Length: 121
Figure (cartoon, rainbow, N blue to C red):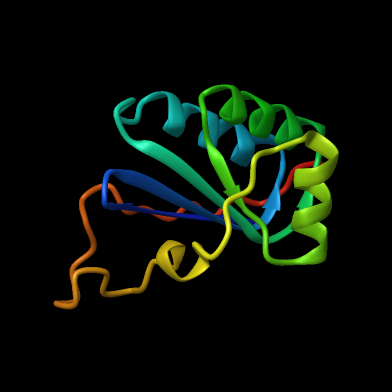
């Protein structure tokens, strides 16, 4: 299962991934990123990703070519970033946490979404 949360903040789009970044879920994230405002800096938080398959790795490399920066706060996510040579950014984890009430009033921005997908591999 993959959960994706996004938040626009200070000219950047923060994309937090949680769970298994595999197959169709990874492809959906690629579609999402290609439809985002290209003027926004893209920051992808991999901290809560438990597993990435070959398709997920291809998507991460694609997102890297678009200029994304990556947050990796766990040994697994740091290993993925090192192995794929993904540029990491430090101390952004608190900014990438998307709460249930992102605007403080219980409303999410229109671009905030969640995907839950079962892994079919």
